[in-house]
Image (cartoon, rainbow, N blue to C red; front, top):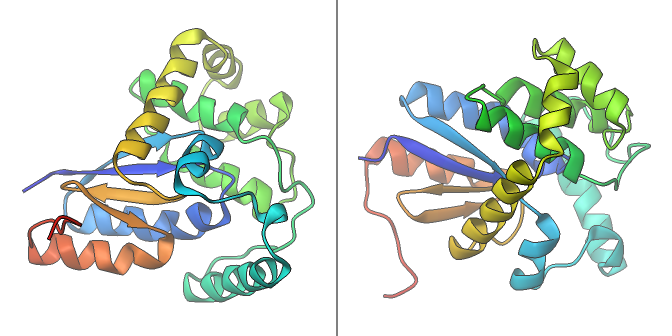
Length: 207
């Protein structure tokens, strides 16, 4: 039995934010660790055929707004479906998460607080000062973490995460991989939980 869940995401994703607490609840209930792997969502979309929300047909943009509201109710999460600073550049915040992982820290709280900053607090998380403030609020050394996030070694970690996500057939964010099987979207977390609880084998497209 695998003891870990690979979590591929970008922290400004509304659905990563909505699924975060449920993911951690599942992991804690079943004794699984979560490997936080922020990736370049645009690199994944290039392979999966997806495009940024603003470039999608109007019907899909409208449905996405409904899905955000629907999921927020289901997950009992406060959020603004049209926040002031979205879309924004996710790389600075994602690289901070990579930096925390690299130094052996638990990035769970910071990841969720970045999502909250976008979707509830209307903060610009591409701003270094905002990121330092959130890091400090979460108990980290904000300036130190931010400085590390700007190094080549951390950039390479995010690049590797992106390639690993593509190899795992992640279509977008969030994607959860357990025993080699990928679950795309926070609305698939219950499927992930069923797989863990039942200890079933991983399904494969090669059937």
